[in-house]
Figure 1 (cartoon, rainbow, N blue to C red):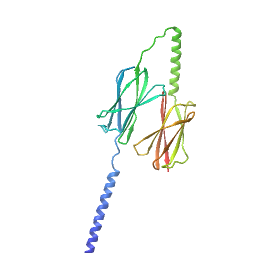
Figure 2: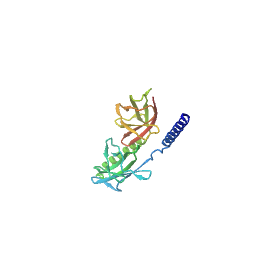
Figure 3: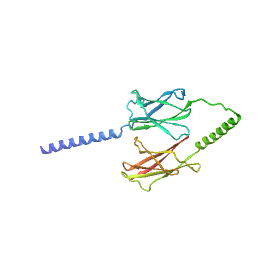
Figure 4: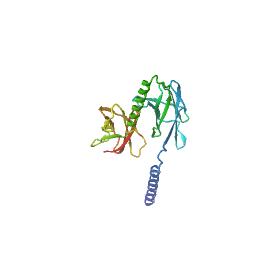
Length: 256
C-alpha cells in the first residue's frame, strides 16, 4: 500500500512540474506589445490669432488606443528657444486634442509625446502659420531685407550642419545609486549653449522610456543625475533642441 501511495505522489509531482514548465514556456513566448502608431492632424491652413484644433490619432495593432497614459504636444517656433508643452484632452475614440492660437506667423514644429501600454512614440511635424508680409518702403529697406534674407540663409545652413555629441560616460555605473551623466555638444567646432538637452533612458528589450532634463553646467556641457533601477544593458539617447537644431545621438551603457 505504501509503495502504491509513493508512486501516486510521484506521478502527481511530475504532472505539477510539467504544468509549471508549460506555463513558463507560454509566458516566455508572450508576444511583445505592438508599436504605437501616432499621426498628427492639423488644419490645412493656419492663420495668426485664430484658434485651431490639433489632434493626435493613436492606434496600436490597428486598434484605437482610448486610454493612453499621457499625450502632450510640444510646440515651438523655428529658431526660437522657448518650447510650450500642452497636455491633450482624451476624446475617448483614440483621438487626443488641444486648442491652440498662434500669435505670430512663421514655421513651427509640433511633437506629440505619447505614452501607452509601456510604449512611447514622439512623431514630429512642421507647420506654417500664415502671417502678413510688409512691403519694403524704399530701396534701402529692400537692401536691408536682402541682407537679412542672406544672413538667414547662412544661419539655416549653419543649423543644418552636423551636431557632435561627446558623451562623458562614468567609469562605473552601479544600479540603485545616483549616477552623473554629462554630454558636451558642439557644431562645426563651436559649442551649443543655452539649448534644451534631455536624456532618454531605457533598458534593453524594455519598452518603458524615461526622459530626464539636463542643465548646462558650463558652456556647451550639460549634466543630469539618474538612478538606474537594475543592473544590465541600458540605452541612453541624448536629445538637443535649439532653434532649428533638433538632433540626437544614442549610446549604450552597462550597469553593474
